Image (cartoon, rainbow, N blue to C red):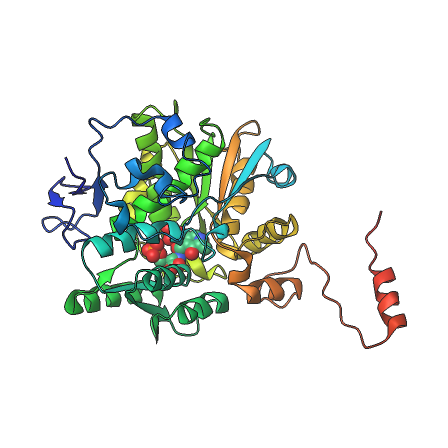
Length: 429
Ligand SMILES: Cc1ncc(COP(=O)(O)O)c(C=O)c1O
Ligand SMILES: N[C@@H](CCOP(=O)(O)O)C(=O)O
């Protein structure tokens, strides 16, 4: 039986070839549901595809095709290829966070520098299945960069709604460079998401934010790939930043599918980490998810400056499925963790550092135990937000001090002056 769309609340089903994001009956979010009867899905099926040079299995998303979109015609798949990101053992950062084993899954190594590429290959492929010519999103930056790139690859028009003067330069440059129509709107991300959905509904444009369940199907592959890299030994924790909550929702669905299919023998716990200034899920978590209040978001981690996450219900489901937790961290904690991730030679953008800052905070609280194995998800590349990095090391960020400053020195065209500076700044042996 072909895959279908199903409401996560009332379970109403819809054909997969309909343009739809929420349930007509109750407004609930939709899941893509696959029929795996008659399909043999094993660890070795995916292990045999590692290192493939041919599409679609050279992609770190479509390597797991049976779990992503089993009956898609390979010729319709829009893939760069994406994924195949490194899982870095990080003993130094493990010590700083207080756990024995910390691995960092670096999604900044995707083609446009964030995990969004994994979702976009799923979303743009579905746009092609539906015969759509125009795709659109609201964005804090990375979704727009990925949409612009994949739309260009698929010969579709990309349209992106950005908050005016509130997007990291690297991301704005990408959307523009890849040829999308860039709208800088005097509205925040949450309002822009409302606008793009209304405009797209009127103009027959396909929305590719994570309200689109095909985005989440692609992002499930982060879990598939990380656990395959751990030789199918599930870690104790998956720790990730939370903004619009599509990624953490995808992780919950991925882990449950792996467990239900017998590919892992236990479920890792998911920890969603929000920036203190943009933490509606965390505030709701403190009430046992009894209450939910959208916020006016404000954080230096502009990627997750989101006050009314569209995937709130799916993220709650992911937390409940995995006996997970939600935590918040300050901008200072984010930027300090970023400085250490950067100095380790891996690098990331501010929002990504929530994973390491959050691991440290949860270990300090005794929620993550020292002997437990943690996989932290780094969601974006260090080049995405150069202003944040240079501002931190120049100690120029408002209300944030450079706890771990690197050296940014100034010298004239004078050898003695340069030698003096270098000798003065020589690292202690
Ligand atoms: C770099 C980065 N990290 C984390 C997130 C949070 O992911 P999600 O919105 O799926 O919760 C986003 C996007 O929102 C992002 O761009
Ligand atoms: N950080 C995101 C915000 C939108 O998230 P999406 O997953 O719903 O598209 C971005 O990069 O725009």
